[in-house]
Length: 555
Image: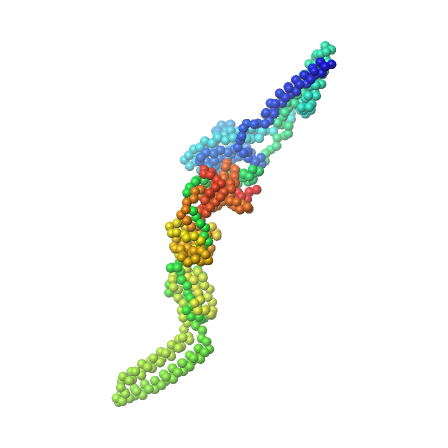
């Protein structure tokens, strides 16, 4: 009895060993452990392959029975419009046709065979030729159940019953049967048949596991060409979407730059090319011939812009009328005296010199009388002190202007300054620039720094080298002034940096043809158009400088 149990256990162990040895190849085949590979594209997009050289970058996308090639410059990510693509395919060499700038099409019936398809693309553009090998992993063609034979379902059903526990149990039962038959010396053929049946059962299960990649019908892969943020934080952006976003890149380079400080500032007129039109005396405003000049009207120096008529108080009018009456009375008396003297001058009773004196006295009285009338009737003209454009001022006919009131502000558009407030002394010789709230960049020249504090700050004046016509007096700007200190880092356009909700600054690195990775960075101001990336990304990387805001919104 003990000998029979031992023999059965031996047969069971032998059967399990055969099952494990047959199952091992199937497991190794299913794992496909061929080493580390580049991150694959999302499953929702069409099959594709990519390659690049130091000059160009190419992405091949399967679209039905055709291939679309997207050809861009490697560093700038700009579509290459004029290029020739020669492709070595499984069916022989072929030439891709241009569809639009940077997009080329090739008929590819060989895609129907499925599996990895190797291509060699020879791209000629801008006088340079690059050879780019790439591989497209196409899904296997669909298979039917008839191709596997009528016995495959039966074997699959048997193999489903085989498990680590089931294998040991079957081996034990078969071993017991074998030992019993051999003791009777009559059932050796039956034992052989039993062993063969058990071996066939295990083998069928392993073969089904190895060959059964068609357990479920193959599904057609649908293409969803859209930007997607991956679980690892990277952003997958297909080439067609990159064209829509207008993504452009630069290669990062280390350098040494002057330290820059940001200062608040505002636009002011050039003191030598601007002026105010003010009233020396308060009075009523009246327009010249043609009316008051409108805002933005060009005027010349000495041109009359308005008139002011001083107001007359009641007591002033009474005093003036009394003075006029006195002058009229004196004029009448002098006129009578002059008439008597002229009648006597012929007889010699009155000297001619006396007559001339009387005439001069009468003329003076007339001048004084006429001046009083002029004060009451003639207004005072207001003239332009410089040539320029009316920047401010909206007088109204009949408006009462106070003494020293500014009626017009005249500015020369091409001559503007910027007044900034600094907490440190800004030395002459350092470059400076400014940026407006709408993104305009201005180049500045240092003009001077004040010696008196203004609200615990020092006023600094800069002249604008290239004043834009859209600038306005009083407009606020941000001034970037160099201090002379040196800083090392990577200079990048301000458009490359985006700010997250937590306040952290980020840039996007173009790591592969259709993949972008956000990189947290530390930045410092450099000038109106650039920032200095002090940490977070190294040299030799492709940095997105246009379209970074759109990448930041991809979810």
